[in-house]
Length: 300
View 1 (tube, rainbow, N blue to C red):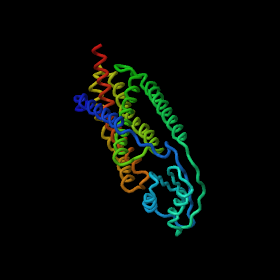
View 2 (cartoon, one colour):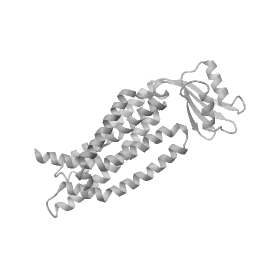
View 3 (cartoon, rainbow, N blue to C red):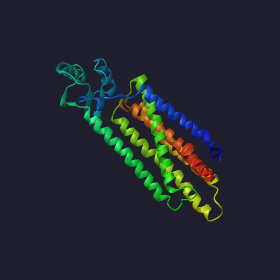
View 4 (tube, rainbow, N blue to C red):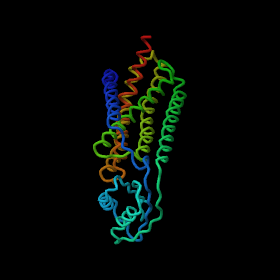
């Protein structure tokens, strides 16, 4: 019952973090990457041995082409994304990738990409978030339809969405700080990270809500329901499992952050933050909000 007894403190922490995240986003903004600004896209295949990504990244930084994204493809290839290049810069890029001609490669394609790709991606991502949110509300409302007292089933879904907004807002605020101080750029992996956070976070919240539902069913046949005690009991039965499950995922993501390629570091960091705050919101925000809503209904 510790969490429920101190629910206003934990909810206050969440509100503070979300406000700071929006403030960070407003002050620093997000630095758009090539996927959203447009640029050049090249694919090269090496004849024999593909150089390491770190080695090529250092050489490409010396060209002063700005942000250059280097992604492995297949066993011997790389996809390179840069700003728009003229013919001389294009030739210099190929020379650098071939390590001054010491490593034979074949350029499979070279195209200009426009910002319209990023705009289309943004529209689809926003639409996906809206549809996911509506689906979550409908699913939870349907699943909890037989446990409509003392909280209406649709309110469970609404609180789950509030928790999801919390889980996404804080990592995005963190990314804006990284964008300002370390040059992190918003790309397709950022969008993938946000959508992944939505999926991972809601599953944790639903697990705890489902435990609350089961305990409400059992208690309804025995005695008068004390909602806050039921939620507190459900948390005690669920929080260890939630923390352990999230911890295993976070350890893998941290390994990816510290030992993985440079191109996925911010992606791994975003997911780590999303998992951490997703677990926090499931335990310290969503369930206490249920109790707060129930207490508010009593006062009406």
